[in-house]
Amino acid sequence: MTENFHLHAFLGKGKEQEKGKEEVCEMLKVLDNDFKDKKLFVGDKFGFVDIVANLVELWMGVFQEATGVVLATNENFPNFCARRDTYMNCSQVKEYLPSRIDELLVFYQAYIPK
Image (cartoon, rainbow, N blue to C red; front, side, top):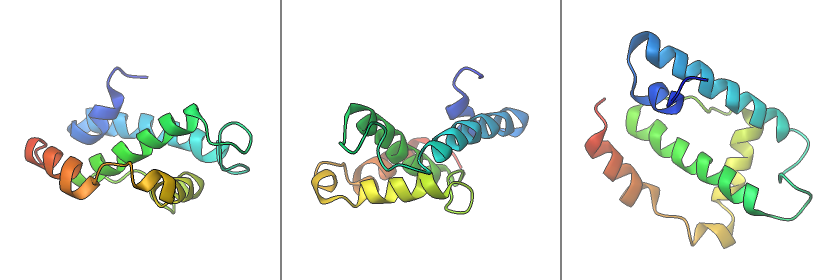
């Protein structure tokens, strides 16, 4: 994997961006396959690994919206997206997540050239 491949996928240009997109999609494919038969990483209790994975899902959504580069779609990664949507809409989690539109998205749109 290329160093900072996730940044190249969203902020790179030309071949650098295409390689970054490929590497992000490879990782998403692994996660999507892992979520095929289960909703959580370890058993049926929400744990630390689930929190970390869901932070990735949160930030990816923000970067996708801020840059216009969309990698994680329901068509390409249905299990990953279903898990993300379930997590983002969970009442116990939702009240502690930052407001994507009001806080994160506006911040990144100000600094990320389109």
